[in-house]
Length: 144
Length: 393
Ligand SMILES: [Zn+2]
Image 1 (cartoon, each protein chain N blue to C red):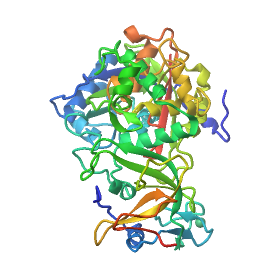
Image 2 (image 1 turned 90 degrees about the horizontal axis):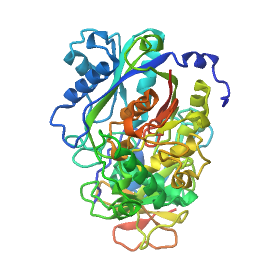
Image 3 (image 1 turned 45 degrees about the vertical axis):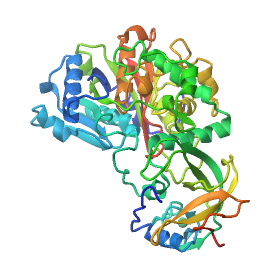
Image 4 (image 1 turned 180 degrees about the horizontal axis):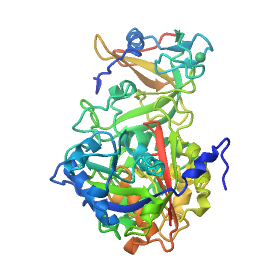
């Protein structure tokens, strides 16, 4: 189960709805084409508001990771790994998730998103080695 | 002297205009038994007493806050201050501790106030822990992309950045540990310090995991306590009880978001440092003692690089060489820092720098200290940072 349920806001609600449909999308600026995450009204490169969703390959590389040995959040049992992933399609952006590999991550390792359905309303994105195939029920690699 | 492109000439007019004329503390404990407001009032009064002033001399109050706090709007009335000509309740944790003193220095330099006390008071151990237990998740739009994974607390977040540095540059646990051991040895000479029993590198390595790669002894002490400093004009400070310590430079910087960080091993301090040094007309080679924000061991190592004391990636070997020990090239966190003195969100680092420059730091005095650097959290997590260069008048 999720340690905390995300609280989507007016910038992010549509993004979470796409995640629930197992789509990995970021915003693309209509003026300059810059991809961005997290969802925001303005493009930080050209400071304009027009944008569209762009589905991207749900891939990245391991930038760092930790293994938490304290129960920092309700519902989590020690120890649990969290990875920091640099998105291949949006290299300026870092995303986080739990690690679904059978072994510890490695520096720079290519990884792929795993969609984990928590319940009818909530799906989260976790990460696994690019070479693995999803095994657990309720998980499914992205479809792009 | 370092140069900064397009630096406004007026920036230099601020140099040495304001001074720190007093410091005050409550005891640092694990359970103060009193309210946060009481801690704040005690530290404010202690700082005024140290300066040889009374509350009637006070016309400004400033603090920073995240979580537990006693703002000027409570402390002013509680001390019977019917009018304050300047006050500030700055949002933010350790990233803005030094910004608050910088802003008070600006206020007194501009004549908006003559005597300001900057303080921070927290019951951060007994009532409102920072460690992520017993309280809700901080509300930021970025929280939704991290908290669902159980990624919520500063030790986790800094551990993530520390591992990135280890992977990139080969920084080691032993280097983090050397810093923890050195700062504990400093705290052993500091009667205020919460943790004074010496530790060894083996003790460090044997301490339990909190969030790998961080062990218990990589982490600051959750503390109940308050600390305050009196900021006034350099002119007025010269007529007061203590030897004045001048604010030679105060600088602010941006930072990186959790979610957009081109290189997690470089902090906002790297961009701030040239501005800070240029404002003071000094460089890293001129710093006699450095009180650097040490929420975790790694925070010090990355700042040693970003403030120019060693090349990028060499902060670990620099610490391992003994350079940051009291007899090293750059004594760092002579009070023991957050790791061993206590965690009062940055103000105790400023107060220790003042003690060192006044020459009243007792057994931990760095002989002949004339110039000190003190820094805030270098801009991870909350995209902000700040720093001061202080100089003995
Ligand atoms: Zn754009």
